[in-house]
Image: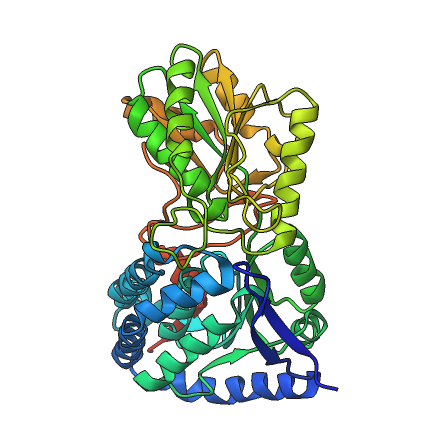
Length: 458
C-alpha cells in the first residue's frame, strides 16, 4: 500500500492536500537523474543559468493571489499579507545580481611562468529540506544560488506546505529549467535518511527543528556530505533607556506575533531597561489587544491559527506552566480562541529563565518581557540561551549597539529592527541554532567548493 503525506489545514482540521511518498528505490532513481543532469547544467554559461532562475521567479510572481490563499489553507497565514513573493523575489534577485562577482575566479598570478587561480566548483546535487513557516522564501534562499552555481536541486517540503514545492517546480520548469535539474519530491523520514546515508546528495540544506537537524547529521555521519542547518531560535530584543519606545513596541511586538509567532527569527523574549519598562509594556499590551484572531481567508483577520494543533498545544503548555510559576498574563483570552489551532496571543511578565517560555523555543504568539538594570544584565540574559540566530537592540547609539553586538552570541545583530532577512548579509547562527551560511557572497561559497589551479607554463 502506497504511503502518503497529508497537509491538515489549521483552518478547520480537514485534509487540504495529500500526496504519495516515493519509495526508496524511486527516490534513489530521482537523485540519480539529478546527478546525471548536473554536468550539462553546470556547463551552461553562467548568464544562461541566471536568466533561467530570474524567469522562474517571474513565473512564481504571476500567481501571488493563489499563493496567498494556498498558504492560508496550508499553514494559516492571513491572506491580507499577500503571500511571500516580495521576499522571494528580493532574495533570488539579489543572488542573481551578485552571482558573476561572487563566483568569479580569484586570480593569484597570470605571468609568462605561471597561471595560479582559485575557482568555484559546484558541489553536484543539492538537497533542500524546507520548512512550512515561510515555505517559499526559505526554499529560494538555497534553490536560487544552488542552481545559479551549477548544482542540480532536489527539494523536499514540510508536510504542512506540500503544495509549495509543486508550485515552485511548475514555475521553474515553465521558465525552461530542465525537469531533472530541479525536482520536487515527497519523502518519508526513513527514505530521506537512506538517501543522505547513501551519498545520493553532495550538499544538504535543512531548515527546521533541532531534532530534525540532528537526524540529518546522523544520517550523513561518515559520508563527508556537508550538512548546513538552521534550527531552533529564541531570539531576544533589548530596549535601552534611550530607545524610541513606540517604535520599539511596534516592531518588537510585530516580530513576536506576526505569522502567529511562527518565524525563524521571531522575537521570543524582550529585556527592557527599568526606566522605560512600564511605558514599553503598556504600549505592547495596547497593540496586541487590537489584533483580530480568525479565519485567515477573512481579509479582516490580522492573526490566524497556528499551523498545526500540536504546535498550539506546546505554546499553551509553556504559558500554563509559566502562570503556575508566578508569571502574569496581560492579554485576556480572545473570543475566537477555540482551544485548538486558534490561539490567543499573549504577553507575560514576572517571568524568569527558570520557565520554559523563556528558555525553550515557543514558535507561537507569546512573548515574555523582563526588566533589566543595565547593559550588563541584558547581555547576560540574552546570552543565556541554547540558541543563537538573531538579536534586536533598540537604542539611538550606534556605537553602543555595535559594542553590545560583539559580546552577543548570535548570528545577526539588528539595531532598531528585527525579524528581517537581508540577502546581502550572511544568514547564519550559532549554538543549537546550527551551522550554515545562507545568501550573500558567502551563500555562493557554501554551495560551491574551491578548486585550485597551479599551472606552470615553462
